[in-house]
Image (cartoon, rainbow, N blue to C red; front, top):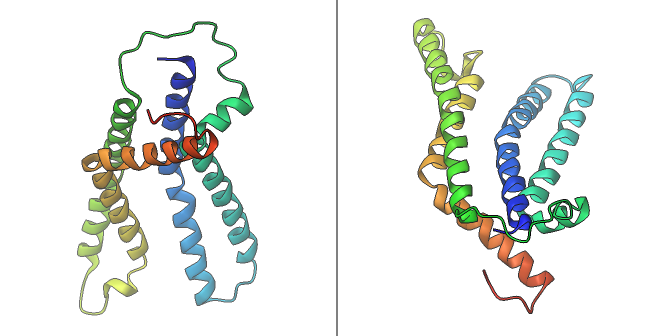
Length: 184
């Protein structure tokens, strides 16, 4: 494994971590948008614009870390600091990415499942003929935690699909940048 490949793996791992972390500001943005439609936009426009800004920064970083890693390595000059020509690590890049995606999914699942079950239990304790799910004040939390459970389950079970998507984008980017290079 070359130093460039090692840095590419490290940057892609960080990019996958950012994909998980973008979930929180995204849910806050959706919540604020729904609140803004129910009330006057008033002072919520500042919060909504800040959340849009934060999400755009996250998206830029995710694209850079996952799909433009060679550009990022070249800009940050990361491979210049390692003098070794070849590092002896016998794991393929896609294997490492698959392991990282599975671990991220497991972590997210372990974080969200208890919260989902707790909120669902709380809802069923308070349910009666007058409280419907759409009127329940914590319904958005239940839906958010359910989405986190489903996304984490997808990450655990379909990690190969996610890795193939990331690798395909990397190969397309490399082919456009250097058409004479063969596919790796």
